[in-house]
Length: 166
Figure (cartoon, rainbow, N blue to C red):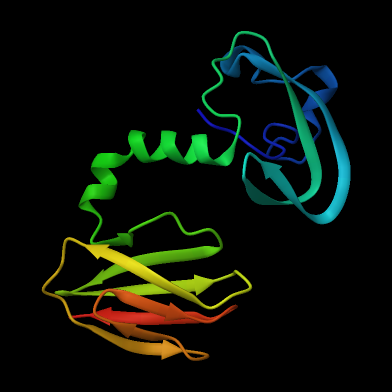
């Protein structure tokens, strides 16, 4: 189990469960050391990468848990290995990990619809790999200057692009 943020601080009724200890201590092999209020939005520097965060930074005191990652790159590597068979079956995916980009793909009959959002501050040229190599892309929506050519998508900062693959 992987948890982050304020997991188990509040129950379903928004009552603070930490008054009597961390409810997942035995399950996760660690306990919450503290939470510090940092800023409305801040960047957690983890290894050579950063993760966006909101308001609080949590600190964990490890007791018996097995640490599988101490930075974003290690966590990404773990998840890629753990879900490799699922990723290999995905109709469309990034060739390389893409910080600040989100992609969702839906099946519609014999076609696929891909929605991509660029939350980074720069125009990106993204290589997409596909097990559906015979599908040709057509842009259905691009709110800025997004384009698609074969399996390369160009997307501006803060842009959403919707592509149909037929």
